[in-house]
Length: 302
Image 1 (tube, rainbow, N blue to C red):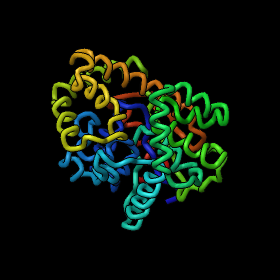
Image 2: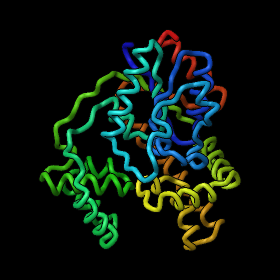
Image 3: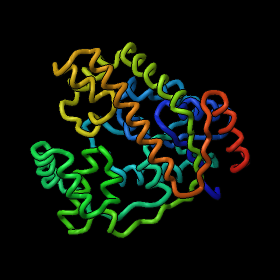
Image 4: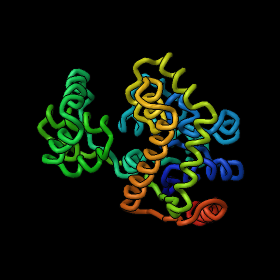
């Protein structure tokens, strides 16, 4: 293929449903670019496609790690590029689907060649983070590299990793040599109006609580007392606070809704600045499906 198709967009915009519908008509296999669907057991809070749905349309990079394991962009890149090559070798079409913009950007732009993580230094940074606070450490990074500070956003794990690299090497991640991408990509970004999306995000959060999100998180904590990366996932983090007695169930739901809307806003900002080969589809629902299908037919002859 000349390029690999990518379906991106904010959370709740309908990416998974569109991929499942088209995957039953076309020879597609999904390469998930979702930072939480990689984890086994994180099902309700991620709206993960069911086993039955994945039997209809093959999905890669779903349920590949235990919640106690750490995921990094470098690890994602290795796994995703390997899966893409495997799908292509079988004469089928890999479709990258997800809302983790950092992963999608890494696929299409490459990543900086960084040293492997130093667990001891990271542990010290986590302790420093708890004492000094997120903003103080982010300011240290911003002084060295505004680009890296912007990429970190509000993610403490990325902040710890960036500062670890800075303190070890004297250079922030963005100043290290970049490893080029293995494939070329063409992206379609779902871009529904916020007035359409935000009520659906609230409804989805309520539905997840009704389906048993609290019980899912309680079971995960029993099996994996330490799952630092997975606990950053929206919904899971808020339920953990409830289970620890920090606030009530209604407050956990309120925080979940607030967090998912804030995340969607950050995704709009991120995907607005995709650098090249991007089509924006400013519709939701059935119109998005028809637009996505037409886009695939036009650019990939499917």
